[in-house]
Image (cartoon, rainbow, N blue to C red; front, side, top):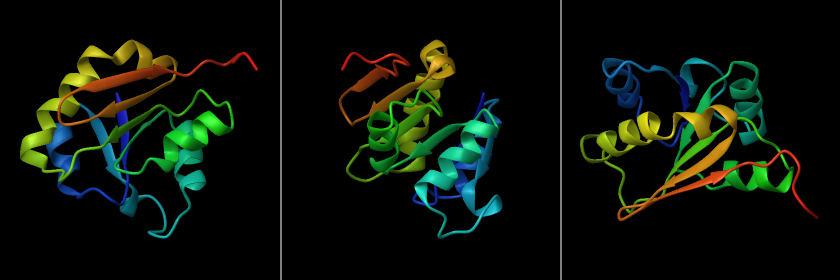
Length: 124
């Protein structure tokens, strides 16, 4: 599984994710630091990557535009700490690989994980 880690998360996530068998790149090594969310999403879509972010705008853009890719994992925890939240992210990647492959927004909160499958044919 390939991930692109948004600018709002530490570059330290890359080594931690790769040690657990995931392919990961921090956006700072891919494109400009002031890139729009749309540019990051387009890169992720073109490269088959999942976006890992703290930003709710990615999920909102997917929903607003009725897109099914890229999948997004949103960390909605008070203070995101690599040591504390890496196990949660790893578990989500392992347990929810199917939805992430077909298109999903997964929100990780301190007390729960919510999975929303992105429907290519939403009912209006």
